Length: 252
Length: 304
Image (cartoon, rainbow over all chains, first blue to last red; front, side):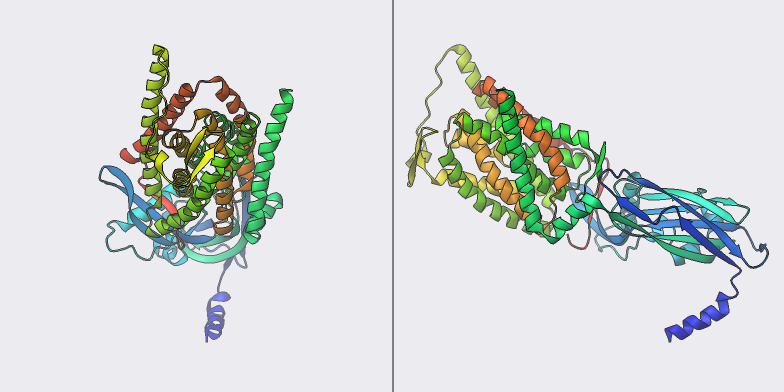
């Protein structure tokens, strides 16, 4: 049934699509090594057309990079008996660990609100929050606090006008990945809009992985925790003994 | 030089960590405290996730205490017998403490309780020690002989044991209880517990100050090694890279600290420790009393 609906959808809209987006990343794999200190990826692409450039409104490009999503608890402090304690908590059901969105022009010129709602492109829409407990007022404050805190850590970025669009065909931008990046598959979306309506979306994945020593230690810690724990203690004891021996030798 | 920590999943400056380790190591060697009560808040401050900071700090304390205890063993200022008795209590306490920690975590206010217990314990111990050592210094200045230890209720309990190095003949019950209390606090607060044990040994058990430092370090090695293992196997939060960086600085610092410690008088040592304890207490109390700049904090959802 679904497949049939899909076939019909393709038959109706697929061929009618006049413009398509083709794009790539400067690298599709980010390796987190011991000296990893953030990275910058270059993103480039082009608009593919079978016909002449249509004149139905202005062309826009939006690029999003989104890290793996997970639930986050946002707590708010309040003064109780003279001290500041965590008084309220709201669980945000799903928030990406990293989210960057870059556009080719002003936000509302590039995309209509209803399209943003459907495709969840802006930072605020990328976060899914179903409901707050009844005793919490202003639940929206909690999601905006989440966005604010992560924006300050460069984990959420909104870069208006950062996509450079040439001759309504070629586009490019770059996105800086911060040093405190977590592992996972980062989905990258290229959205082509005309007159604020989404014309085409192309998706690809950026793999972020720990490699080498980082990979080894992470795996060991999770797969052989007892060995890892004992090894940690052994290193500690050896270092303690080593320092003591060296100091004694130095002093003769 | 930036280094990416595999478990903490953040990138930090390696020299900053070496420096922090060294600084705390000096204090650890001087006072026989693990230094965890200083290091753990410092690690929070530079952006290490609290769970990783607490677990990794336990691992680092193993190294600095071991380095320190070797120096004390050579000078024969470790009461191994007393240390073992304290250790038995400590291990029982640590196991209990982990249970309490998990129970509090389920209630959701573990952060506040950890902070409050820091403020309360550091405040009480710091001020008691400060007043006592100030009096002692005044007395020695005045030329009076130090008062002999009083005979208290501690001396009238059963199961007496001879502790030759400390020159004590007391019941094993008080040291075991001290050990249990320290173990519980160690597990909850993510520290070695030296800053509580050292005063308890001096004032409660009446041990000579010179022996206290080495004996405390001896007990801390085992309790923190046990805690490290518990954290590594249950929470996977021990970051080996972070631990190695901290402990390289720490072990060197501990050696330096032990040397400084031998040149200072016992009262001076105590008053310095008291001032330090009070400073940390004051900082934590201010954090609780003043309005924080950011009212909101983020935490892991789903499983906590």
